[in-house]
Amino acid sequence: AWRSLLLSVPGIITRSAALNAAHCTWSGMSENPLPISIRPETPTDHPAIRDVIVQAFGQEVEANLVDLLRQQKAAVISLVAEVDEHIVGHILYSPVTIETNPRNRQILGLAPLAVLPAWQRRGVGGALVRNSFEICCSLPVDGAVVLGSPEYYPRFGFFPAVKYGLRSEYPVPPEDFMVITFQPTGLEGCSGAVHYHPAFSWLDV
Image (cartoon, rainbow, N blue to C red; front, side, top):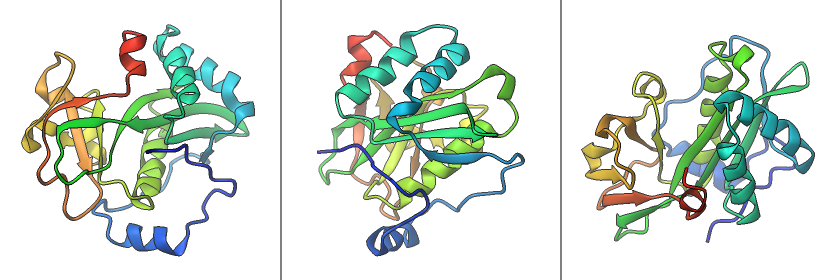
């Protein structure tokens, strides 16, 4: 079972995690154009994170989802982006299940990714995604899926999940549902519908 990722000292990776990262198929990070600090969230960050999400989406549904995922111990990775010690962005990953997964591949779902409107298109979202990939590569994670803009996410290495025979549980265009793999074996053997954590359906996200 997944458990919340607890990183009390950001940037420290164990030897076993480093070995996992050495086999990661993701190519690595690029320089952030701004002095952006990325770190794991802490409980004291929750009000600021909620404000970021509400402002980014213009509603409370996604913020309520994050609260519920925390309550369900399903926030596997949850990072914040800071500029001048102010939280301006947030990213969260939770576990997903795949209809056909005979080799028990461990897959996460990226959702949501939120950046304050005033800080959008300034590299904050990209910094969150790239740093989250570094963590995924240090964990026994085979890949991640995202439901989002096909104009945005492919720049990080995401590609249409349909190439693996995967489809979203939601009725969306196939190009909007994407996947990235972190291990050489990829998602071999996986196919069918991908289901997010039940919290997504509880809130009708």
